Image 1 (cartoon, rainbow, N blue to C red):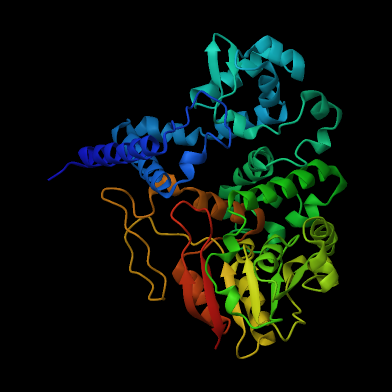
Image 2: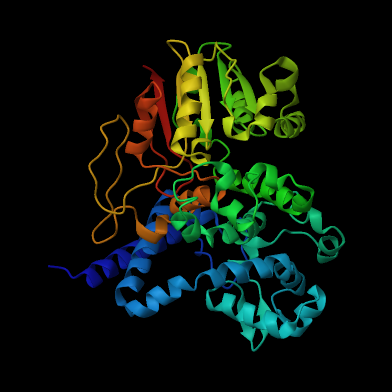
Length: 476
C-alpha cells in the first residue's frame, strides 16, 4: 500500500510533468517567481490542463508540509500568520511596490526606499525581510529589494509622484488587487481579531444582525458596515472598498454570469430583476449577450447613481432603449437590514441574486427569499449565484441535477485543502463584516425550501473558482 508521503509525491510529480508537457507543446516557459507579473507570461496558466495541475500541486504541497513539519512549528506559524497580513498592508500603503517598479530589476536599497516613502528604514527592512521570506518581493543582496511575480500583482501602475499627490485616488482605475488586499488587511483584519470575543460574549454570542458584527465591535460602533463606511472619516476606506469589489469581479471572467442558466431561452422582453445588483456588471453582461431581455437593477440610491454613470460609459444604448433600468428603493437607505423588504416587481421572469445571500444571516436571507417568492409568478425562476462551501471530508451528495462534485485523489482532502481556501476566507469575512455566511449546498437548499422555493438544478462552478455555482429554483 502506498504511504501518504509517497502518494503526495506522486501527485506532485505527475502534475508537474503535466505542466511541463503543456508548456513544451505551447513553446512557452512557465512563469518564473523572480520575474514581475505580466498578463502575457500568465497565458499558459489559463489553459485548463495547467490550471487543474496547479491546483493539485498546491493542495499536495500544503498537505505535504502539514504532514512533515513539526506539529508545534506548523501550528505556531499558523498562529502568527497575521504578521503576513500586517506586513503586506504596510508595503502596499507605503507604495513600496511602485517605488521598486520605478527602480527597475536592479532593485533598491532599503534606505532609499524609506527615503521615498518617508518611513523608518530599520522598521521597513524587517517588514520587507519577512515578506521576502514568504516569496513576496525578493532580496537581491543584503537589504536590496526588487519586485517579483507575487509583489508586482499589487502594483497600481501609477507613478509614485501621483500617489503622493493624490492618496485618496491611489486605487481608482486599477485592477483592484492592491485595494482588495488593503481592505482585507485593514478593516477585515481588525474585525477578525474580535471573532473570539464576539463568539463568547453572552451579549453577542447569538447575535446575527449586521449592526453587531465582529467588525463593528472592533471599531466600537453599531452602524453596520455600509453606514460606517459612508462616514466622512472613512472616505479612503469607502473608495478602496468599491475598487476592491470591482477587483473581485475582475477575478471572474466577464462572462461568468452566462455560465449556467439558459438566458437565451427566455422569451423576448423577459424581465430579469438584478436584486442588489450594484453598478450592474452582471446585467450589462446579460444584455450584451442577450439583447432580447430587459434587466432591472435594484440597489441602494448611492450605488444606483454610480451604476447609471457606469452604464452610460460602457453600454449607453441600453439605458436609452430601456433594456437596463436602475431603481433605488428609498427604504434601503433607512433600513439596511430590510434590504429587500418591499419587492414591487411582480412580472419578473427571473430574480437574480448574485453574491447577495452570503452578506446575511439565515433569518434575513429567508426574509429576502420570501419577499421574492411572494412577488413571483408561477413561471418565475430564481437564479442564486454564490459560493458553496464544501466539507473537508467525503460527504453524501445532495440529490440535485448538476450537483456532481469531483473527488480528488487520495490522500488529498475532499475540498482540495489550502488550494481551495478562498471560499473559507470569504465565509469568515462575511461573518466578520455582517454576521453573514457562505453555506453548504444542503444549507442553501434548506433555506430555499423554507422560503417557498424548490431547487430545480444547479450548475457547479469550475474547479479553480473562475466562476461561481448557480442554483436555479422555482416557486413551490
